[in-house]
Length: 143
Image (cartoon, rainbow, N blue to C red):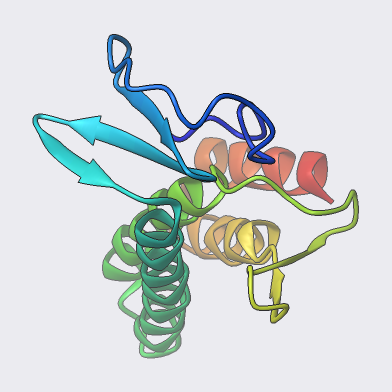
């Protein structure tokens, strides 16, 4: 995970080369090392953009299966969508609204509550009332 705002701004000392905890700061770019592989913030944001797209894809795929009557397959895809959105949530928001922005200014609405609402309704259709309740509680908590 990339540290959020620590060490940014380029005001001090030309960059630390200490990588004890897996992080290094070089010329305004924070680099994370994982098993010897260095990842920049741009790479992390690209991965999160891909995860965001995957979450929307799996949500839509689940809705297709749900409307076709394949409820349990739909629940499986909703769980994929939720797990991808958990990865996206690691990107720090620029403001306190539900709408976040990518670094290029494009809005990134938080669709986690929408996915949870869909999953709750699908679980209700599958007569899995406990899961439906848990998804709806989490959905209401996020909204």
